[in-house]
Image (cartoon, rainbow, N blue to C red; front, side):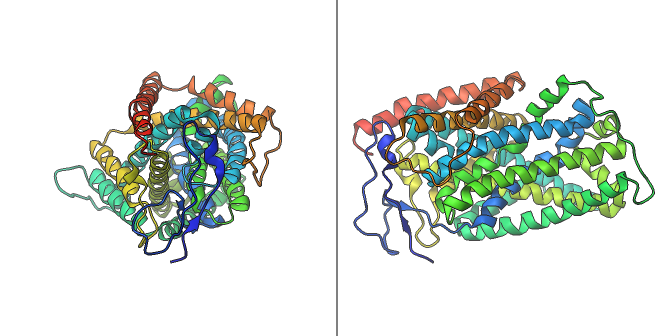
Length: 479
């Protein structure tokens, strides 16, 4: 295992009430106590960063939303995905600049706390942790459903005890992924790389065949519905519905402290993952609506892509799509667990959570306590088998963070503190960050009211935790 990397950046000077991080006197492999100046090892390369972003974003967007989106917006659902991608890109650009200036674990929380103060950082950081926990639980339940569906497609019915089989499988996968993350980020990133490569190969093959089929290469040319068959307004409401597909790029920033060559790899990974995934989403909708028409595709609901695979390639096509869906939910859960633990790690370093949460396992170089604090609640939520609305709450919390990331860039550009020296500067500032912030907030207006209420409650409770825990810790001099 390589030497631990020491980061003595003075970025901490800008956070309210927090002294700059002290430079450690010495750090060795034998150190047994966590030092504030010790950062996680940089073991994730460009491919790993892209895999985290793509692997998280390509799950629900490809395998759950096509039928639902087509039912709402018709073939123009492709435009809905494109609008979501543009908004995500407007946030990915300022996030990339902030990440190269502050390449530390914690992502959006770290950026916002260093620019807007610890109160805003606490609300975003605690909300991000819980949002990722909810999202990971949702992915794991979906993973269980895909495993059951794969076996059902080949005529095998699973029975794993009194609990529903998809819940048992989700629990097993969650525990295994948490344990794998404890054993080393490099192993987790390597697994993510393999899964995403296989997933993209499957999707590219099926979609290429679908495009050729739609244009008549195989003698079955199809004519899609009128593009705006459902009208114009549904395009915007559907964009809000499918935006949960674009939560993954910010997770690259969450593990920024472990990215190699962050000045190059961070912006390329964040912007690149958004562009790649948006193209896949748009092509998927166009192929699917060309095959069945929007109304019939919408009737398939969440299993629409399985029917697309079956129509193109028969039973092998259906199984192929099911396997790809399995890989997608697995990679999304894997990246979410990793990112949730890094949010906890960053919060602990700033005394917004108990200090023990930022301890590093020196055998593996991973924050094992933070991983347990992420994995434990995820397993509890998986066991409830009722996390769909919590996934939308995760989207709400991310949109709030995205808007504040755009504001954070504007604040730091105006203040221009001595430590703010990004290697990448986004073009189009200040206009594009303003548009990104407004667009992020505007999408919230199209969300389910219950999700908005739950998200606001979480933000209020997070602020309460900051006031009554973090302030108390600071007064006692524990930070």
